[in-house]
Length: 307
Ligand SMILES: NC(=O)c1ccc[n+]([C@@H]2O[C@H](COP(=O)([O-])OP(=O)(O)OC[C@H]3O[C@@H](n4cnc5c(N)ncnc54)[C@H](OP(=O)(O)O)[C@@H]3O)[C@@H](O)[C@H]2O)c1
Image (cartoon, rainbow, N blue to C red; front, side):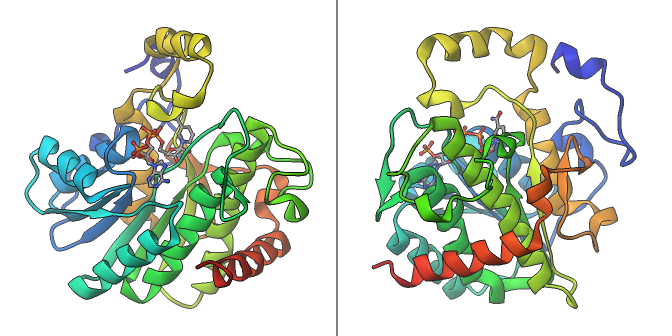
């Protein structure tokens, strides 16, 4: 537990910044339930997979390759788990993952869109689109829309956003610059991708209205994980050094997504943004339903044009 979380009090949910994924699921049986977690081989995804399995769930963990997913699962020594490959920057890989899940015949009680990349120092692209937008948003867009029919009657979609969505460009999503070629900053592009994760949950929740299925977005907190791999090595070293004092542990970092994916009190809560295991307010345009609808329509166009 980080020092700082000791001084933060819990919110209305009874949980807070210091809560761990184990604590938010204490006493909860997830036996008979199945969850899919992307980015299962590292950081928050690995801990999420471990705790869901600990509570009895069947877990499907995806990683860029089947070997990486299998290795992660082997390392956790959990029984009811299956690894799948899902390279989010490769639509064919994402579609194969969708097919594999469909073919397995499982019903998904939760899809936790956890995988992500952050703050690439130089512009990189996939299929002509800026890589963070493509990986964090478009890859998950293909995955989730492809698996909607596999979602159980009470299935939950949880999108990993970030407080860094506030670093998105002023206009929110730069629809005229999704390639990044008209201007690129590492944090602006990451912020835009995390705002896109938030808006995706918002629009999906609208599309799921009238059902018992939900979609929400979360900020997990700030945790020293492999996510910092693209940061300046000096900044990364400082980040690691202050981690025990000021940052959440991985166990605490995984708590919000596990809470939102499983807690019985959230059965009918949808279209919301959570931080520290409590509802939170995103940047104003994170609640803009017209922007969310526009992003969905544009994402469909992008996906339709992909090989
Ligand atoms: N840590 C934080 O402080 C923080 C704060 C706010 C939000 N978040 C969000 O939390 C989520 C989890 O981050 P983390 O901190 O656990 O980072 P992490 O340890 O770097 O884990 C990220 C995971 O995403 C996977 N991934 C990256 N690119 C991928 C791709 N193209 N296709 C498939 N998988 C890919 C990584 O696989 P490889 O290992 O193979 O690269 C890894 O499994 C991210 O969405 C992040 O934006 C984290």
